[in-house]
Image 1 (cartoon, rainbow, N blue to C red):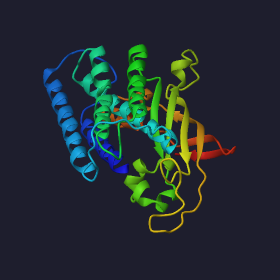
Image 2 (image 1 turned 90 degrees about the vertical axis):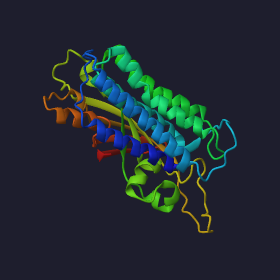
Image 3 (image 1 turned 180 degrees about the horizontal axis):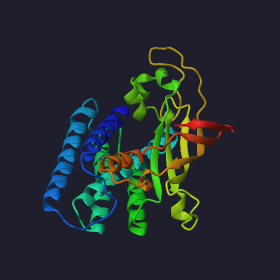
Image 4 (image 1 turned 120 degrees about the vertical axis):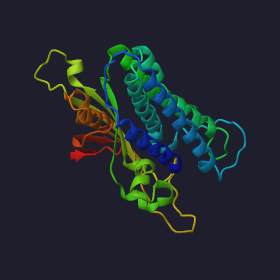
Length: 306
């Protein structure tokens, strides 16, 4: 599982690095520049084709091709992977939308074409999954992919900005070392493979809701998050390794979080470098005081939670 996510993570890192070379602008100038459109279309096509080719030749090389089929994996990983699918399409769509703004495309064209890029990519990956025995096409993955794109596109059409921003955070857990082959054997692989340390957030800008409350800073958000813990496999934790060694019993549970956050898009600056930096920082939840409630019945306060 984490090989696929690692591929996508690398894709995002490379794409973000390239996009950081051009200024981020959240307005729609509609001053169309064909040269820029050529760069965006060409670059997007190369990444799309290159990544799918890489996935098809490396990711699936040890799997059995059996033809297209569906797979119900709704119970897996306490649905953390579904939130990851939605986040990936949201983040890739946000990058695509910004790239289309940079070309000077008309507003709706930039929103629909750019915002759908993540959905196009992830749906293509899902179709590839559908042809191999270990994976299969997951309808709920497709729903999650669509939800991430719709959250982005819907807000941009309705409000011309992201009032509710989808964000991600990760903290290291000790569970990864119990099953490094599945949950990651390095710091980078664990970010995308160890679902126990992942939290997905919906960060709401308060001034966008309470427009006339000038005492509220424009950059202040309140965020709700979802995470889970205790997962040593997709659905049921194994008690024995393949070599016969015993695994410690770990209880699986869900966690819900409430925290403050920062909307970096609302911090004014004339610096193109800072605009790009803020754009990418806004994809990550800032570690701030957080209240947690979980399905074990526990209530916890974290001075800083990431």
